[in-house]
Length: 336
Image (cartoon, rainbow, N blue to C red; front, top):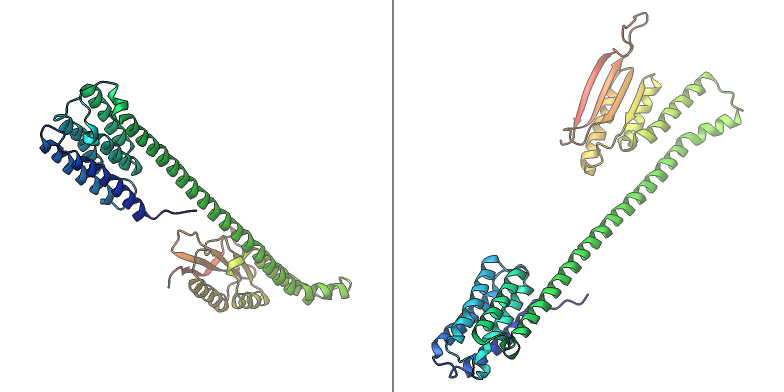
């Protein structure tokens, strides 16, 4: 994309406006009195300088657009009050091109309504002062054409800017989607590799023994099955330390359930390491028969909730099988 420096556009507009000032100065003797023309010239210079310099945004401030519109209404009245509409005034009608230039600047700075009102006021004043034929003779039609062209260019540039933003947003979303897909594929491969490391030795042992296993080996298989389930449901809750503590808890006969529902995905790496280190410590220090670790909602202050439950003593009957004694209840906070 070819970008035109803003300073170059300002210089070109300033030179074009200076040309009208030169025409006004060289024809200052044509009006009956030069003072109204001088006042109009001062207003034009002030309005042009302000239009080119005031405001850092592309859109002109509303108060400046109103000032430019007022100048474009007053300037023709001042100049034509000292001119003869039936005579050939030459460059003394410089105000026509000056109004067109000033309103073109306003249109380029996205004050379209003010620009059209300015040239319409110029056309009405010209018809009242010198008749409809003067619209072509004095160049009013050309001033209107400039504003129309500036309007179309501003609209086209606005549409192009919106399309560019839309395409950039679509590109960012596509990149994010691709990154998410790559992350899912990578995570899936990691989980598959981890599962293979866990299950492959036992599967080979089962194949070697023809499926005939001792009670100890069956118990080991159940522990391995639970470990594989952790890799699927535990996701971000798993570290080597957590895996080791969960394995020890299962070897002593505890039932451990890890459920990752995405509540810790937004945590920074340092905070996640702290949370999982605390989780491993909680599992290691617990003597509960059933341990459940679950990620909390993203809006919760806790990152992970860990509950330890104790099974009833032999011979004890509970009214509700799920009504177990709680050994501990731990909420690991998101922030230290």
